Image: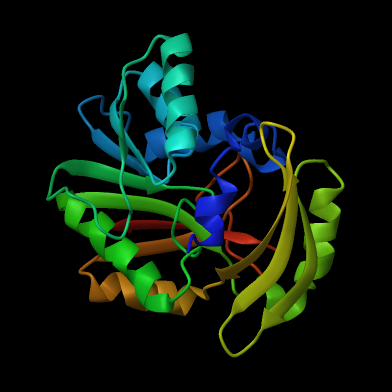
Length: 253
């Protein structure tokens, strides 16, 4: 049986590119570039690359990049967009829990919940972190975003989703947050690229900063910094707070 995140992205590439949360690409890539000093020899892997927005922007800036995703439909759109943009990117279909790379990359990015936090168990989420780490060389850097577990302790996730859905695109219904597992369970209603209406039962894991720090330390990262993740405006100046729905994690081996 397919998991919700596999079903969601079967035929949802064009519609996905219209969602409100995918329009911060330029600012996010500016931050990524700063993180490795704009060194053009940096080899980058983009995990859960979707329709390739970060991969394509970084390739346009002259970087060598591989884009990895589980969805063939998303990758097909990513290849079309890369061709339109006149850039060459190595897009490959892989499950982030079983990546075939060993020490090949200087930098891994996994943005906008690119796999991590979507898995159905904590062990599977940890497998993603393990596989990304294995793909990096011994001085590698890993930049990713994940859902901030501090947010639901102070705010209603239901109200947050309802305000976000007013901007169009997919909508979340019957939302509940489980304090024992830090998972939000919800029903997503959306229209695929062929205009078919679909309904999926989803659940995502929120993480608190101390959990992320411990998971990354156990994988051998020496330096771990966590910030608030502002859409399209990532910055080391944004101290993580209970107001941030997502957190930005920058870790270095």
